[in-house]
Image (tube, rainbow, N blue to C red; front, side, top):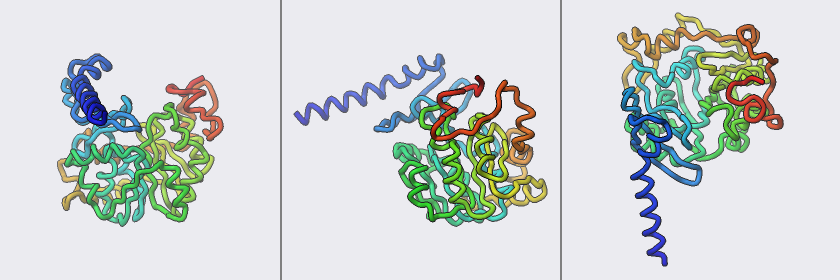
Length: 318
């Protein structure tokens, strides 16, 4: 009967909730892992977990894989938002921005501190993350910010359907390069779609998760491509240069909740986003290749060869 089905469904959710902590402690081999929030839908499972031993809270796991942290603390930049703030330092006047992959919202929330922004289109394929964002005040303002439009869709599909829209920045904090389906965001074909959606001097910034072939791929489409902190890639048809004086001036203008994002104390923190942003080195493809010891030539990722998923995998080697 319908009543029986409903009761069975409730029992299943009770069992999942009751045993989730145990499952994660077993999975990670740590008694100190605790689960704060759990969401399940047809796209999979999202957990927000805490590492109580390390004192690290609000770690986001999507289908048991690391998917960021709910943290925008400029003094303790444990999720390296400096990679995002670098865009404020190098682009003079970003007004329209596209975010592909909202996850739990930390990057989009931090992005809202850019004072020149007029519009942020944020794409997220899993609507379960909206339920997560609602529960965490540090990121929930993005749901009510009039500048931010959140669309539940596939990022590449959305770009193709909205090809007339142009952006100053396109930001993809992409998942691990070796995961199934990641080629859809890292391939040469995707880079061309993104380039078509950028204004002159616009920048595509994405997480390579340290796949060296992504830099070669970006360079095949854009005139300039650079390898930044933790393998974050910055690509544009204009040269990207970090001028420390200019960068400091622009970072000083970032505003969140009506206050400067970086106060004088924040600027002195060694693990703070301010110093980490200013210490970024951007390597060209030639400079990057001289530092590599892969035992192979870098290759261009395409929709057809899917090399990050099937050929080289996690370590990027033969």
